[in-house]
Length: 205
Ligand code: ADP
Image (cartoon, rainbow, N blue to C red; front, side, top):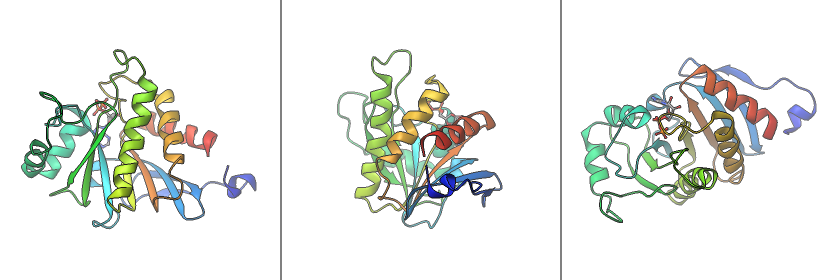
């Protein structure tokens, strides 16, 4: 727990620039985790050292959910950039648990990090794959001098990952990178997911 929590002080909870609720947690003296409700396609901090993470699929050519929303907002240049990512086997540009980086084109951030979370019911080790998706995205961001990064709830849409379990994997993996980013955000699309993430952050941080 942060020193503020230990002292019994209320957590910092305000409205974000996007107008939605946001709750902040200290990861280290110089790094903050923010949990907020909102649309990740409009998120940015400075447009030059920030990235959003896309919950993509292995083909990396767009899809439904947050992937479709990110491609629509970024424009057709994003699809062209994804097509240039080499296939590692036929039809696969980014295997489950791995990450790839592209520019962000018409989005207000500098980069998009595409990662592929597990399909919960068919993956043999969904927890390993989900933590790898977060960890490899954070490593790739760090290697590209990203200082601010925002994640959606990877695998929590059509890939069917239970929310509470997913939130524990997400937040504990971010904790491994406590000193590496100025801010790590989770931008969550529904009240339900926001509430689960905020509860888990209070438990783990
Ligand atoms: P997956 O295939 O990894 O399950 P989905 O896109 O189906 O990916 O869902 C991932 C999460 O992203 C879901 O919780 C969904 O509600 C959320 N989501 C969808 N659109 C947006 C958006 N514009 N911003 C943030 N999160 C979004």
